[in-house]
Image (cartoon, protein in one colour):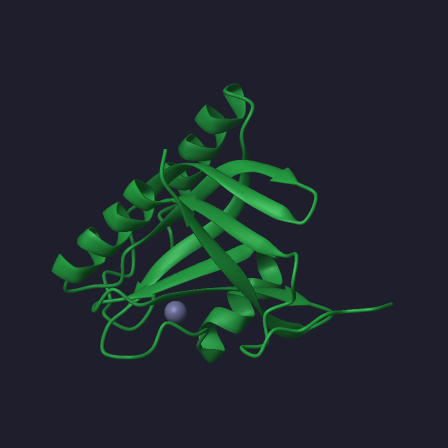
Length: 147
Ligand SMILES: [Zn+2]
């Protein structure tokens, strides 16, 4: 199968579309937090585009600056509510403190359990999105749009 690669390794066509305001809200909370923040991205798929309609923070039950685990009951509640509005989980987001917004070894294990797009931000406003395909991490192009 033909695959077109951009210089940064992202596959052309596969992209995450997120509103500027939603991305900013994640970055703002991450910048102020002493622990990793995390949550779910809800939306829909349109071919190779993943459109984020809602961002929902879920408490990090590890309360750690180096790892996260979404509080399970809050996570289930968020998913139920979103599904009631016709939205599905299209991604997971979390923040990194003092390290680049790329998947850690621990994140890779999580990505195997949750094979959706993983959006990672750092505490300086940088971000990246990744997905696991055939066991390999691929960078996903992020398209930020205004409402
Ligand atoms: Zn991480």
